[in-house]
Length: 75
Image (cartoon, rainbow, N blue to C red):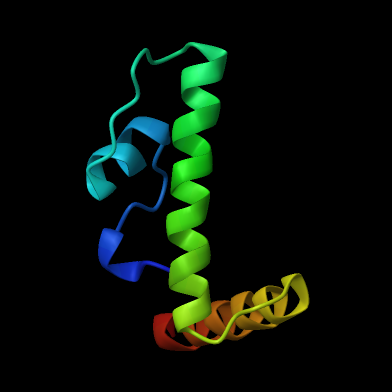
């Protein structure tokens, strides 16, 4: 929803880091994974702000709307 062009429906951390061109120093190391996860979160927060999603409540509302649109297009 925040980054539909990614088209990564069931993606893991490696898929997301590759999509955004990030690099984890040492994968499957707690500190390195936490750092790259934080970097991904910052990127997605930026995408959310561009869509006027500025709170957890607004995110929940947007996810609900997105899901309803997806369901209506699948019929």
